[in-house]
Amino acid sequence: MAEPQQGPREGSQNQNQNQNQTPEQIEAEIEAARQRLGETVEALGAKTDVKGRVSHRAQSVRDQHGTALLAGGIGALVLVVGVVVWRRRG
Image (cartoon, rainbow, N blue to C red; front, side):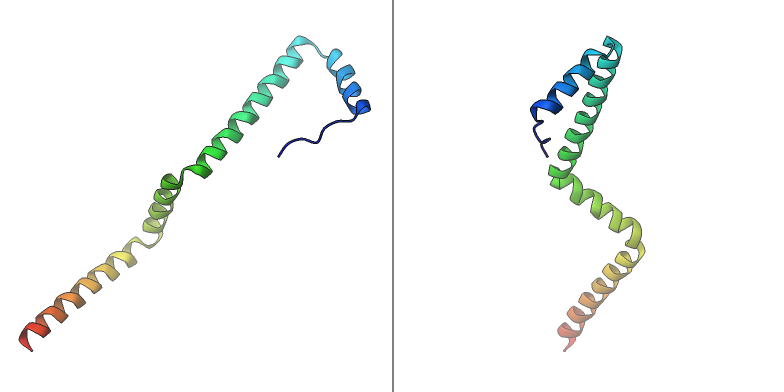
């Protein structure tokens, strides 16, 4: 979200504070702001990567429930084969 705009007093206080900083302090603040911006952009990119999120979620489900899903799939296959054989004989 956007920062609220500062009133005249707050702006002048920040300006005075900035004038008392050394170039190294200003560069450190700029670097910290770049770091935060980079993290924000990365987070937004991750939220818009639907394919990646779905893939990650699917892998997570497979990791947690892999054996149960495999057993269920095999059970469903056996059931389908059994119904096909039963209908051909019947």
